[in-house]
Image (cartoon, rainbow, N blue to C red; front, side, top):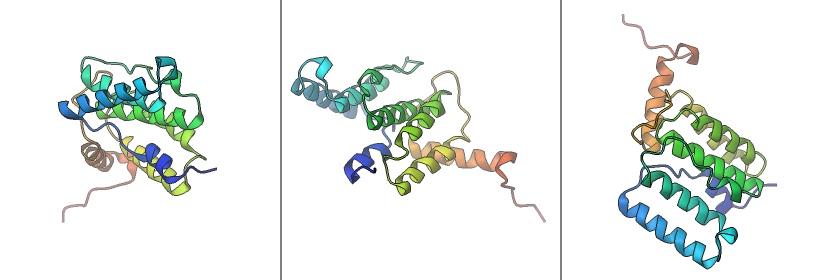
Length: 169
């Protein structure tokens, strides 16, 4: 079974480009409005919980491990996929070692619920990011384009990649 396009797009999006303070404020405001709409926290919209999780990550720059805030609300395979993909993306944006674990789990949950074309978009992005050197401590945040550019350079320098630099004549 595959999801319709809007839901597939939720799984394909990149949620971890470092936002401006205005974007964080807007995200918090929307998340709070959604939570109020759905009543008590126990009845919170999963997407509002994810929005708050993203905002919390960017508001607390001293945070060195990822909060499991959204895990409790990820009650379906699609929600598990989205939670793990967002968590992995946030960690990857700051080049933290556990990022690939979350991204791999998210990819496994996404398998079978998104089209094969979309699955391979995620798969290829994650494979490209594997070449980054990740750290145990939170690093300066990077945009996806910056991460991919750096990983492409790292792949070319990695002897296991099979890529070789042109020889001088």
